[in-house]
Image 1 (tube, rainbow, N blue to C red):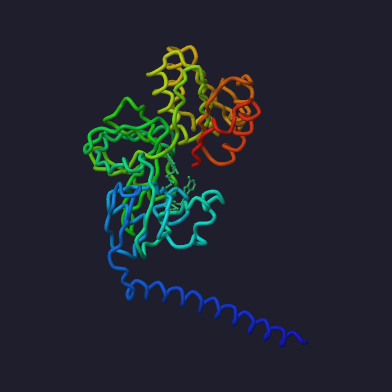
Image 2: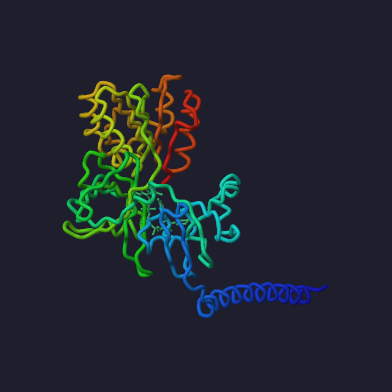
Amino acid sequence: MNCLCMGIVFGEYLLSILSFGGLTVSLAAILIVAERLLVNYGTCKLDINAGQKPLEVPGGQTLLASLYASQIFIPSACGGKGSCGHCKITVTAGGGPVLPTETAYLSRKEMRSNVRLACQVKIREDIYVRIPEDMLNVRMFTSTLESIKDLTHDIKQIRLALNDPAEISHRPGQYVQVQAPSSDGPVFRAYSISSPTYESNVVELVVRLVPGGIGSTYLHNLQVGQAVSFTGPYGEFVLNDDPSVEIVCVGGGCGMAPMKNIIYTLYHRWPERSCWLFFGCRTVRDVFYLGQFQELAGKHSNFHVVYALSDKLGEDEDWDGETGFIHLAADKHLEPNVRRQAFLCGPPPMIEAVTRVLEEKGIGSQDIFYDEF
Ligand SMILES: Cc1cc2nc3c(=O)[nH]c(=O)nc-3n(C[C@H](O)[C@H](O)[C@H](O)COP(=O)(O)OP(=O)(O)OC[C@H]3O[C@@H](n4cnc5c(N)ncnc54)[C@H](O)[C@@H]3O)c2cc1C
Ligand code: FES
């Protein structure tokens, strides 16, 4: 076969793939539009916890949207796009088969236990769900920006004074979902609460600016006095109540937020308790809160603060802390076989490396908690 013939055959082959792909996409779009316009599912029953909260909702919406409209706020860090896996709830009947868009986020055990992604399940008939009590207590809060200040070149501390409700009850390590405006309507983004639990009339956040990011750009540009809405609190971390258990916090960047909450809450309740803070930064300009934590360590002899810089020092830079990756600093300072609970917060590679070190030191995986972001 000459080059011309091969080109024609290849062209026809490509054309048939493109037209088949185009046909599939068009058919899917037609089906979605047809379902919206032609199918009326009427009103469906949405039963929560076997009759604890029976609701009537219009069919055709997602389970997440129907719950939201009924003031039940399920964690949804990606805003319902099916890309965070946070909106898991148990659907005991009426949810239809598990969709391909859900399988990446559900373990086999979860699928066997009827766990589903609420943002992917459409209500087409009466549906029966189980929602933990904690989640039913999540509220929508209105607040006012009390202060905003630079912590580093790209991280700000944001304090929100609560209006309605005027107080929040949360556990250290929990987070809220801030509502930010976008061209497609309001979106929600998750931010850990950095203020300690005893400051119940305020929610403080530590927010890193993601270039072009909707939520972080909105928060970084807030003006004092501006209104901010959020839902919360969310998160399953529970601090071990046994004061003989040592607490280890390891993180970097905006991963500081939940750790600051944990540490201040801890020393308010147990002034003698043992706790380590390992905080990884790239350069001197990424360091924040160090002086504040050193001051706290001056008051509590069992509190140990270790900051480490991973990049080489500049010629004019001064640093007398650790250098290298933060998991190596944890490896260097922690004695093995001490009863501990660990909380890790940062990017996935850091979490992986620190988890390995902690497991080698004898901490069981059931005592290692983490938030990846
Ligand atoms: C449980 C939990 C707690 C969190 N707590 C905090 C916190 O305390 N402080 C904080 O600053 N953030 C926190 N985050 C991350 C936060 O929810 C947002 O994902 C982040 O602020 C980016 O949102 P955005 O709307 O600005 O960007 P988006 O508009 O969502 O994204 C814009 C673009 O940036 C990319 N992108 C998104 N996130 C990142 C990232 N982290 N780094 C680089 N690129 C990114 C996206 O892929 C997209 O292309 C937390 C996340 C979770 C799940
Ligand atoms: S809300 Fe993110 S996966 Fe459902």
